[in-house]
Image (cartoon, rainbow, N blue to C red; front, side, top):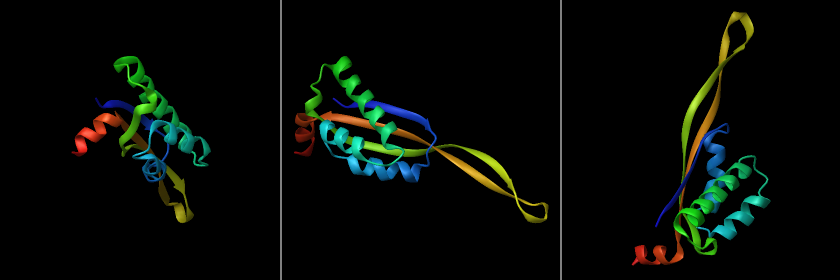
Length: 118
């Protein structure tokens, strides 16, 4: 049983969020939680909330044990961009792009992960 949680319109660039998500891919729930609590990146707090949301979905909707959960897949896709103008010399302007991210997280149990690898 795959458990899904998503985070949309995170106001951090996808490149920076991927640094955090690549670290916790394949970890158990407890390992990922400990890793995210100690990580000094700005997006780690938001990814921790997403992990907690996925765990709550697993426990409340499917009656799974949180200690058996593993982060199977987590992907970051670019969201919309805010575009702003920065005035520069001679009356011209540069575009500033404020990037956003969409994050999807999938958790599975240890037993199911073993069955799919066979």
